[in-house]
Each structure stands twice: as C-alpha cells, then as structure tokens.
Length: 182
Image (cartoon, rainbow, N blue to C red):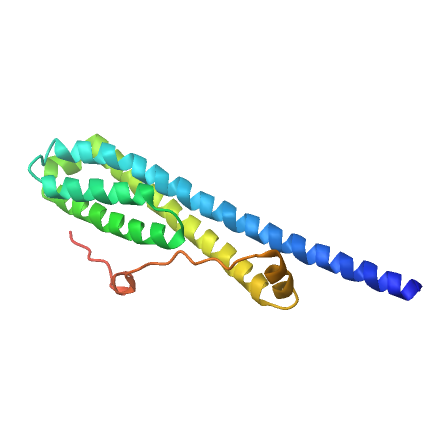
C-alpha cells in the first residue's frame, strides 16, 4: 500500500514538474516574440521621420516613398510568425531602396537628422537580430520539449503546439557578401 502511494506521489510530482517546465518554456517563447514585435514597432515608427527627411531632398522619388509606405503598412498589419517574416522581408527591401535613393544626395547624407535616423535604424536592426536569435532559441527549446519523451505525452495532452522559427526568406541574399563602396 505504501509503495503504491509513493509511486503515485512520484508520478504526480513528475507530471507537475514536466508540465511546469513546458509552461515556462512557452512563456519564454511568448516573451521572445514580444521582444521582436517591440523592436519591429520601433523600426516602423522611425520610418515616417526618415521618409520625410529624404522627401525634402528627393521629392521626385515618389515611387520609392510609396513602396516604403505600403511595405510599412503591411508590416504593421502582419500577424503571426510567417506573415510577419514575409512582411518584414518586403519592408527591408523597400528600406534598401530608400537608402539607395539617399546615396544620390550628398547633402542628405550630411543632414544631421538623416544621419541620426539612420543610426537609430541601424541600432534597431541590431536589436531585431538579437531578438530574433533569442526567439529562435526559445522556439528551439520549446519544440524540443514538445518532441522528447516524456514531455511529448504531456504536451499532446495539454495542447502545446510547436512554433515556427523566424527565418530569412531570401537565403541567397544573406549568403552574398556585402558590397562595400568607397
């Protein structure tokens, strides 16, 4: 009788421990996703100021401004990892076009506001990359716990779902070395 009680207590304790570890890992993943969205929002908030600064120098570049504005709107409406990932890749490409336009205007590149906004954007990009790494690490941990025995049984029982990694769409562009032009 005592042996059955001890075994039951050990089993219940193990279930509680494993369930709590799944919950902690899920919460860590949610926190990591929140960090990404905060940084993406910060970047989206910087862009209108950047566009207005560039417009003062390159008002005839309406197509570039429209592309950036549309990409920003799509990025703001994105929901979930895959949709956000796709919208962010489009937005990054639009920003590259905006910076390419700025290269044609030496006065703009020397403008203090433009330089400050560009520095803030670079800083935000670095923070986004760090948040992505943290999120992907949390997703790795959660997905691993959901797949391995015995937590896989509890994960299935309590409805824990695997998450998608926040990945880069265009791996060819990532592998290509950056162009340095002096």
